[in-house]
Image (cartoon, rainbow, N blue to C red; front, side, top):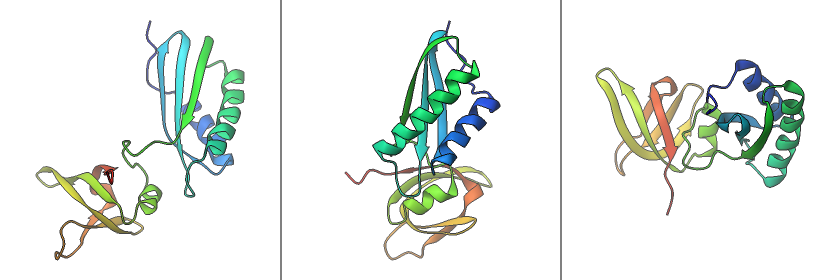
Length: 155
């Protein structure tokens, strides 16, 4: 029997609190595998970057919480890592870390969605600014119109 990938609110809140205590943000949680052999993946980020020491500290705290919670029957494996470049940016603070880098994003428009690629110039409280082509004026995009944004690999 495969585990449901929906993460209960109680679990999400508890794991977010673990990450926050260690100056990290919980970006995503996935639970996969089968009953008795669950794999719990925590993806964390931090304004100063994610180190192996931070991942280890979050892993220790999260394991203590999970072990005492009764969320899983049987054994589980806990993996803690950074979200990686391929995972979409989800929070405005994440965009600030990537000023100067190229983003590929989908923006919600009145007629659907538009794909946009450009260099992230700045991040404001409710919008990002992208330079989409040399010589053209930068484009301001409200944060709430961004459907998905990923950092493009420089290589």
